[in-house]
Length: 411
Image 1: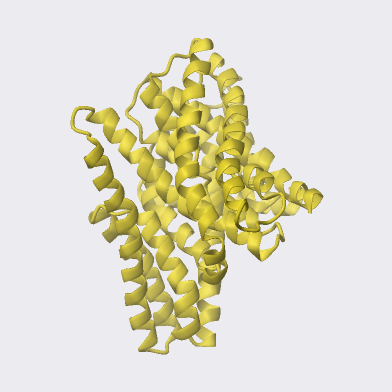
Image 2: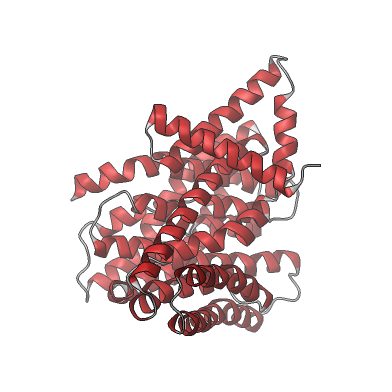
């Protein structure tokens, strides 16, 4: 059995190699290029095994099987990536877009979850891929929120206006937290259908969502106190790291939303602390440190997504379902974004083409795959995992590569 150090060493080495190959010979955006190379390597590994040229496929599957992708992302990488993303979101600009972001993170996510689930239920039945409705709801919940990791890595290179960038980034940061809460409630309903009531759901939502916001503010206040009383950039960088790791772990222990808490703490750090509690040297050090963390973890994560192709269960009839559900997810995204945005636009002036950009720029990523992997083992879980992977790959590769030209054409 491989140790954690061995697995981490292999992942980092492979990710670095893929990043080098992409930068040296291909020239795609780093995360997308790394993921595509990883997928190609996965296919080649499988083909070599079929040809009898070594048992690379089994060895690779054994290695990947030793990695709990769900825990690695949701209880490892996610806190760092969310904090790094929130660190550079301007709070004043976020306030101006608060109603759009709030509506998309609540009404939009819930509406999308229901519509995707209902359409998927009947579509899969027509294709003889029967899936219980509760699993369809879980699929809707995990695929409806945009992935802040995938979105933020793409937004950085688009060169869009600050207003549009704030809306895209803000929606992805907050709807992810709400989406995870919705998914958790549905998963509890699957596991304990007799013990879930409307009041229980309301309590869980308050504990997770509202509790996450409050706890994030507490973390921010603590961080502000510590940073405001010293002037040592090395210690201050360490404090921001402690806010993320200790804060996320404590939030999960207190049964509040770790993702929401870390996002709030990141916004607090990037705005209040940056302005009032950091010297110029500390600002540069914090920015450089978290930018590096963000880049490294993104590359490793997208390499891991590509390599996960080796262990994703596959049935031929599922592939057609996955392709059709790409159309369903994108179409439902248009409705779930369009309805609240159009209503808000009646009273507030919004960016032109906002709905189109949010729809095509609403990327899904590793969080969706991680949530699918957290489902109870069985055929239903395998089907949800496969169609999730198909949608995620399409989203990252096709939408991720075309969103830049798409925005430039609109603007």
